[in-house]
Image (cartoon, rainbow, N blue to C red; front, side, top):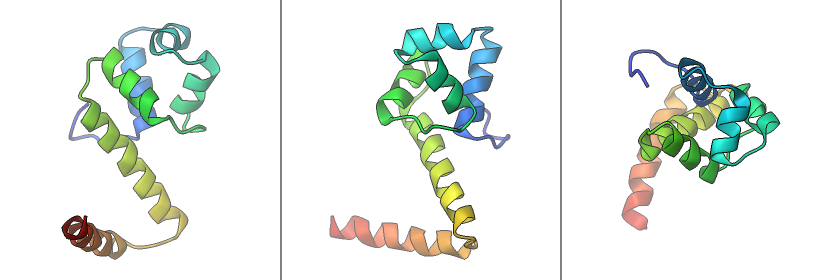
Length: 104
C-alpha cells in the first residue's frame, strides 16, 4: 500500500480487492471466511482476527507484518478518538512501550 496516502485497514482491503477486480465472494472463499464477514470487515463493522489478517496478506502477496501494523494503528487511532485524547497521549504511550520493553 502507498505510504503517502493514509487509509484504514478496511479501506485497504477493499481497494486491493477492487483493483484486482475480484468479488467479495471470490476473495472470501480464497481466504476462508464468509462473504458477509468480509463485507463487514471492509466496511469496518467487524474487526478481523489475526489469522484473517494473515490470510489477506498471503492472498494479496503483502507483508504480513505491514498488514498487522496497519490494523493495529487503526485500533490505536480509534481508541484515541473514542477517549477524546490528544496526540500527547501517543507520546506518553511511546515512552511506556520503551519502558516495558526493558522489563520484558
